[in-house]
Length: 425
Image (tube, rainbow, N blue to C red; front, side, top):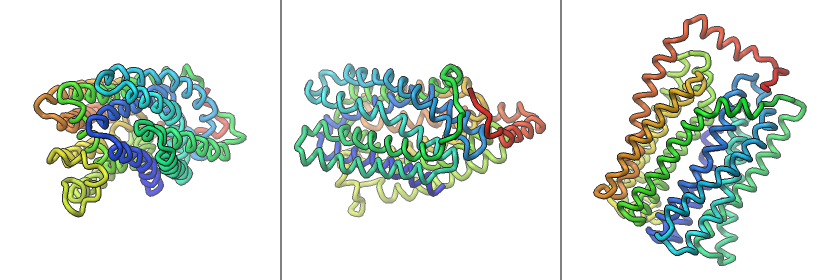
């Protein structure tokens, strides 16, 4: 768990540093345009992650600890091809913001967003695979490289006096490239001599429903940003983006816990072991709940002891927006263990159906932006995750009830008995 939290924390600090640079360099309106491109970047991560990388990770869990990394040899090349296709998300962002800012601003943001959109999915996959293989501190080292090179990139680009709009994604692209190389070196030193592989058709067959699951919240996030920008204006979207940056530590905690405990949730779902799954979920809820209440006291309002008021002033332009976004971000973390249980249990199709419905619900909430303004973004996030929480439990009840004690024991034995030389081709 500590390594997972450090990994997620360092990675998120890199993203946060880039976001703070954007908040310092841009007006609220330009920050709103940046927010659209940032959501397009997040959307671009989805295709390679859920169609290729996550199915490979699920298959890796079925192998013996210490012999899971060879899957990278076949998953990375196929995933990179999927990343090329996902660059279409940047073009979609151009269409949404065209006319809401100068052509130069839009084009610079688009060009600089291409590199991180292309490289970050592979880097994140390597980190997750290292966690799955019990090499969590190596994964944290990759995130450390990402943070260091993000800061170096910011300093270099500011010193070179490049256009302000090129700085955030430009520095992020430098960090993505350097940390990906670091990850390839660290992973290569561990999986030499093992020949396990996976076939892309097998990954796509497993990942098509996972892709729906991953695409739904990211498409919804993009749609929500576009709707808020249209109904309430890009300045309101800029305030909401500032609040998202402030609330990011809660997302970091959820991602960090998921990096270290997520494989255990997948194993619990695979084995049909609900007691084990509940222990993991309880840890999530207790830690995220405690962090949420503590963080609300520090960053929820604009008071003299809050350093974020100077770093991200846009977050506190609308009273209560930062606090509302912090609560909504905590809700997003709480549902992660249940999601991983369903991955492990093979309920990808049911999971996809729940997530599509949840995100449609969230998008509908964003249409209130005409009178809720910037609040439409956290309200949409909270509504969709409340839907997830309720309906995940309904599906999990059916999943665990469907397995007899003998089936659970057989599944657990199968996980432990996978031999080292077994391939997944």
